Amino acid sequence: MVALPDATTTGTTILGKNSDRPIYDCQPLMSYPRQTHPPGATLKLEYREIPQVRETYATIGSSPYWCWGYEEGINEFGVAIGNEAIFTKTFAQAAQASKADRPPELGLLGMDLLRLGLERGRTAREALEVITSLVEQYGQWGSGVPTFGHEAGGYDNSYIIADAKEAWILETVGKRWIAKRVTRGVATISNEPSIRTEWDLASPDLIDYAIEMGWWPRDRKSEFDFALAYIDFNTPLQLSHIRAQRSRQLLAEKKTGDVSPRWVMRTLRDHYETTFLEGPYFNAALPDFLTLCMHVSPAGFTWGNTASSAVFILPGTAERLAQMWWTPVTPCTGLYLPAFAAVSDLPQMLSTAGQQGKTVTAPPLAQKDAFASDSYWWLFRDLLDRIKGDEIGTTFNQRQPMVRAAFDRLEEKWAAEAWKVERQAVDLKRAGRSAEATRVLNAFTQKCLEEALETINTLRRSLTV
Image (cartoon, rainbow, N blue to C red):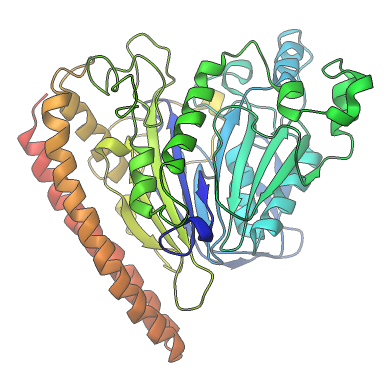
């Protein structure tokens, strides 16, 4: 979800994203500096090796333990991107061909495309152009879920690409794409194509291909509806549409100019508590429908937990610095930790995976990750299990409010401190002391991490499974 500057209390763009993944899909927070690459350099991804560009920009992103790319991330210029899986006729067509022993050529994963957009784009529009050119060249066939084969673990992708001035909704279908520019108000996406009859940019043959495949009538070409033409109706919309509408409803509850980072965090933590449903029947960790903050279900109808959640604050002035607030695992039991886009290095614990380590591995060949005490992500997975007590969340309703109260106090404290740290760093930069400014920002994230660990470990000791 994204709120443009006219809609926010901060006067900045705010982007929020939940990443829903299998419960073992550890997602460390990674950072990479700006780099210069030699002529002829290549980049080896999960399925393809592609030419590297001369210069790549510094990035921070939430990256599955087996993956080169990010589920959500930000670069040094304040461009932020989040993506979602979408289920389309183009993917269903590719899966059928694969089952018939005619698999498409393996392509680039949506997470890799996201990071490539951040590494190569100084603005949202530039990142859009990077991603779309790569989609056209390589496509995106291949599993994006560890331990899953291509038919079961693959999908097409939708993105929100944002900077301080604008956002783009980009939706990709195989080697084709469509994009809509957002300059005011709010917009959200979920696991379904959201662009209908109005857009700004698209592949030149997008409509003709749908007509050729019989997905859209030729005599209604001027009325083309992208979502209606390309969506896979064999994938139930209950996976996506209820959640999409809920995020729109929560953002719409705020008057223009009243969407705050805290409200976006509240939205990402939602389980329909303030609707006629009054939340899940027994507890939020025992879902009876798919929620914005997702929890694994013993019935198997969700595909796991929310594996990470992030809120990006993207200012358009030199007086402010872009920020990423990130938590591992479910945000309702999580703690948004601040990091400025200008940091040069993250504490190692944030970037540590579990027992499988951090690698680049084709998902069908990946093994399930498991708990490691030096992984910040796995401490939160363990904390969630302790809050639940058992598979059906017997102790969740008693324990989650206690954890939430402790974490809320830290988030409020850090938000107040972040403003002061930002002012200090901006003043140092203005005085030509950029290296010192970076050290100040790094030290702030380190301090917050130490306070987080003290609180998390105290909570873990007090909660027995």
